[in-house]
Length: 89
Image 1 (cartoon, rainbow, N blue to C red):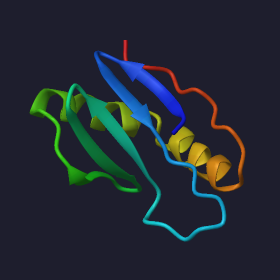
Image 2 (cartoon, one colour):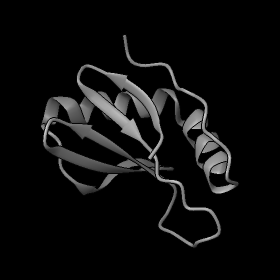
Image 3 (cartoon, rainbow, N blue to C red):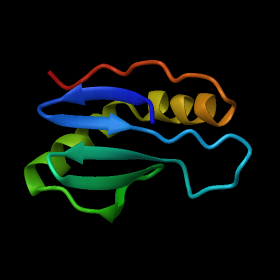
């Protein structure tokens, strides 16, 4: 699963699903042993769990980079590599 970004111990990834219908456009956020799955439009937690602080960081990051996340989703579904997305600093 391609990694899109990494910040404050959080890793953001997106699955490649060429030619297969899947869920709504989404990404996975990993922090230690926790995983949160977030929809892209609107940005919201749809499965899993993260600690509150990390959840807020992921949501803020995703709001800032929503168009880039949607573009990455489209690239992956077309069989292309996503472009890296800047982390929170």
